[in-house]
Image (cartoon, rainbow, N blue to C red; front, side, top):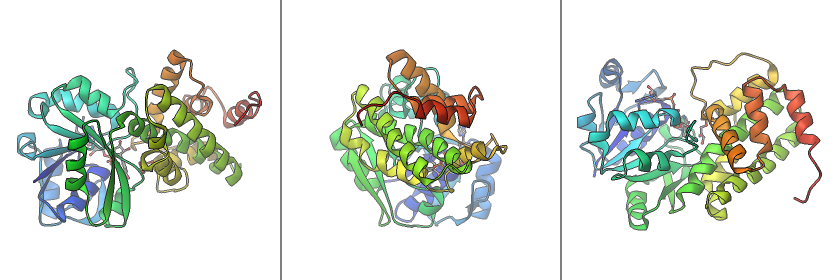
Length: 320
Ligand SMILES: NC(=O)C1=CN([C@@H]2O[C@H](COP(=O)(O)OP(=O)(O)OC[C@H]3O[C@@H](n4cnc5c(N)ncnc54)[C@H](O)[C@@H]3O)[C@@H](O)[C@H]2O)C=CC1
Ligand SMILES: O=C(CO)COP(=O)(O)O
């Protein structure tokens, strides 16, 4: 079996490097210069510096070559997923497509599996998500992730195909739970970064993580997910990683908000758009998502951090 990874960012490259230690992998970049640069240097210095490519990793900017692989991983940012699928619909239709992005689409409120299903109804969509930094995967450090696909036979086959000696995949058929956990944990990580950046303390962070988890569960259950999925790697696991590590870009965006510093908006920070998308969804469905709403307010500068904290602390007292 061979694998293609579409999107030569940090995560796509890390997955390609990891998988190419055991199987042939084609890494596709939309930019021919980038694909050629990687082919010559055997590295991706633009997005994942310091990692050498295994022999079985090839790069290309020709999607018809990449699409010859049996399984296709989509490692483009969430808000670019629909455009990528539309641009290459003829080659991707009817294929096994494993989304590797985390987020909820602006405008539609859909997660990655749902976007694939909508754009390419003949494809078999899956989602690879959970706690992992690209740098850790590329170095071959021990990692465990969730692989979600509605089809129980296909998810088993993909689990075997995409697990490696260092990358252990757990499977689930609950794609909604996996989508929501991976998306919302980034929003909560921005909130946690903000309180740490402002010096509000580890106790405040623990409160946000726990109540943020309650928001993740509330949204996921309302959409038909299973509670145990949220307790797994794609939910609790990724929340724990992202809210506690400065390697996380979402957490670092929060830190910069808390410290009143500028942040480079060209960096991929999925939680920013997802906060807006989820706030809209919460409004339509009358779901109570106070932390997500506050993060949206911080990002669009309609709220200061002091005002956001005051709002959260002044909410009516309730049962846990
Ligand atoms: N970096 C990490 O540690 C991890 C990232 N992820 C997820 O992976 C996804 C991608 O993140 P990164 O790779 O880190 O981002 P990145 O910013 O390093 O790379 C994104 C890549 O997507 C490409 N791209 C953007 N729009 C495109 C389009 N329309 N068509 C083709 N290619 C396009 C860009 O050229 C770039 O190479 C995100 O959803 C992120 O949440 C998940 C786990 C870990
Ligand atoms: O998803 C991730 C860890 O699981 C990566 O986090 P960031 O996108 O915040 O860097």
